[in-house]
Structures are given as structure tokens and as C-alpha cells.
Length: 122
Image (cartoon, rainbow, N blue to C red):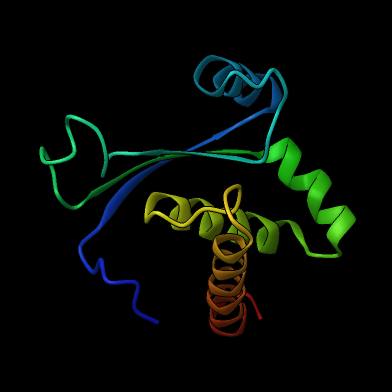
């Protein structure tokens, strides 16, 4: 599966709920923990500094664990799903705008997750 960024780089930070809540409050004004935050380096005044750098992802392991229990996925599957979700955000996919955008992101996320699940997780 090709997303069009064969040489892309990103950083990944795995944190607890307290840490992701602070980042969520500080950068998005949402005073609560969340599962994943994506900070794109492909937009803004420094976007041209390093064209292969997608940005930074922050994932809460505590939230991922809770969501894995609720969803029936194991913890590695949930972590993989959140990583995919974050990468799609770094590539410009959104789910909080229009229903069409949300549907496109959900379909792409499911498509990639199935490939990974078959290839690596099983």
C-alpha cells in the first residue's frame, strides 16, 4: 500500500494520560486526555525545511489500553491503529470536518490496518 511518501520520517512519543492531557490542553485547548496527537511539519512557516519530515505523533498508552479493551482489539493492534490514525493526520486526512472527509479517513485507516494486521500482527 502506497501513501506517496516513501522516504518520510516522523517522531513518535509514547506517554501516559497526564502527559497527553497537558499537550492537548496546551496546543489544542482541550483539557482532557486523548488517544493520539499529530503535529504536522508539512504546514506552516517551517514546512520547507525538511520535505521528508511528516511531523510528530504522541500516543497515550493508557488511553490505548482502555480503548483496546472496549474495542476488542489487543493492545498491539490498538497501538497500530492509533499510529495509522496519526500518520493519516500528518498526511492531511481529517475526520472532524465534513462527513465526506471523515468517511475517507475511516476507509483509508481500515484499509491500512487490515494490511498491517494480516502482514504483521497475525
